[in-house]
Length: 161
Image (cartoon, rainbow, N blue to C red; front, side, top):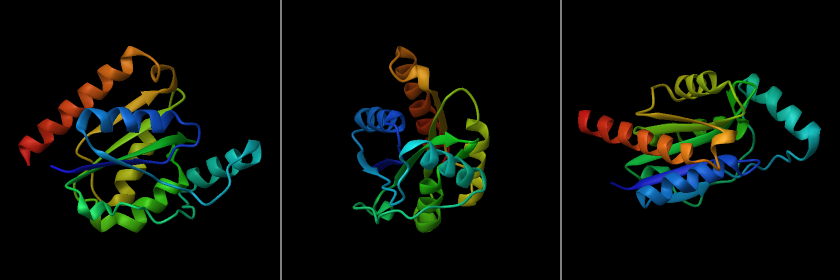
């Protein structure tokens, strides 16, 4: 099975999780590149408001076509209990290619349930599996355990399909 792991990451936390998942699966990675500047307090504040409102932002065309993969694992940081606007744009652009999809998100301490729910609603169907990582777990052994549990859930979902 060919797998693509893709995410939007502003601070690098979500990218760290993306790379850990991809390394374990031998998967390809693809960043979601936002064309909107998010520097400073104003950039992050506007991004959080837009996330809360379910808006999308301008993103660059990916180098890898998600329709070329059997599974796409899509990640986002949690902003105001919602996925980042760049992830909303990715879902809207590639909805037809995201039949078999799993989601992951990184959060400060809360909001992941809302973000994951919004992603599923936007896509039009639930993911095969989800992973939530708190920022304080990123450099911790808890990350390895959570990723292994997530991958186990994915294998189980594949067995049921």
